[in-house]
Length: 553
Image (cartoon, rainbow, N blue to C red; front, side, top):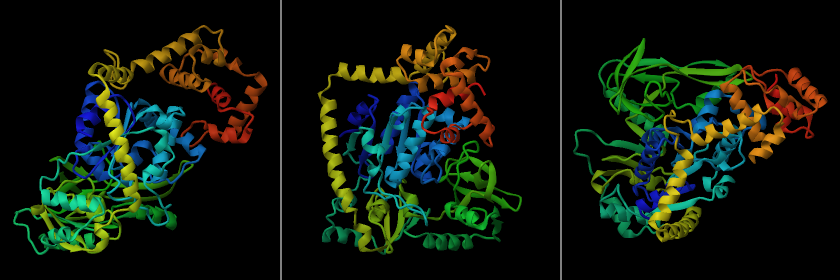
């Protein structure tokens, strides 16, 4: 499939899986589509499975954007708590399109978890809350990484939500990163699981060569220990004494230990002026995210200043990572969100394009590592191999099978789009824009459709003769949706008179639900949660009734 065909499919509003070999232009196409959506006033959630991948798209990790963090699962109670967070609710409700890049490194259960949060926050049972979902990535690249003690995840296509999305597959076949036929031959041989003696000979020719450029190539290793050793060696070469920044911590030892394992910032950070560093936490206000690279301009006990790769000068603030439960801080660590970055792991390099890279694959332990590392460079001239083993040139057998399925689906979807007349295609594109385009004069994110539907519900409330079920029937929507509208209308106008709606349920039932709310009390944020009340009342009480009572508390 060509990029233009894929773009035409995206513009119809269909859910899409965008795939293809490394360098086929997936990220470029996503940027083009994002620009198109921005130009028409749509609100786009731009995310990726990793911080570095997110930087290339100007977004954030799917974990941060959706609010799932490092969770493997969320209870109904926890989903309700997330729904009550105003900043998260505003972001997820305002979105029209969700983009998830580098999906190969996203666990199947976290893919489902993000979908569950969106359904809960947007109060919709449609997959991912009814957003257009655009998934991008290449499953020949690295699989999800599981931390110690974390559930072992599978590729995202095993997620329950994957088939529910009814994805159109767009398999890009053109090559835009590599213009070297020899390198392309190597990459395709690995991808096809057909590494020949000729392929091996080409790779062996890149051993023992040295870069001639003034700027040394980025070094890629498979293990963190090698990365750390390289970074320490380079730091030692810089003049002067290193400044030491120790991590602060408080809370239960086991919880603090868990935080340290999940945090990329070192317990002791050593820096010198001119050191290469990488940010390891998002801070959009300061202009960096997890994965942003930079050079230290100043480092003293009083603070650190970094010039990012985008040229922005940043006075780096301390960051905290914490575990909170019932509004109380259970554990916390505090450190500057930086680590040395002369060398990075192959995992961290996914999504990066490099003019030159010095790569050691002698300790590869995961199929796909070699393919990712070798495809970072644009030509063989920029490839300097320092080690290679058999695992580096392998791919997952399962991926080979799924890849064939994706290819066949892409052929069908390409044929479908080619068969459409220009007029019919334009009509579909315009229909989708009508869904996401804000009305003239409205601020960004205020959609005509959403504003009109709230107004329609408000007009029916004003009649004062209709109860919740009557409004739902008149609007041809669910009672849950009516209640969602009322909640949003009350946020906009706390004085809105809904007193008559109290009669939507019997007085006895109302009083019983209200008493349970009062017995359980408010959460740490001063709000009433639905799930604990529903659990206390039992299955004979609907969430709709409970939400109605909450409006009057």
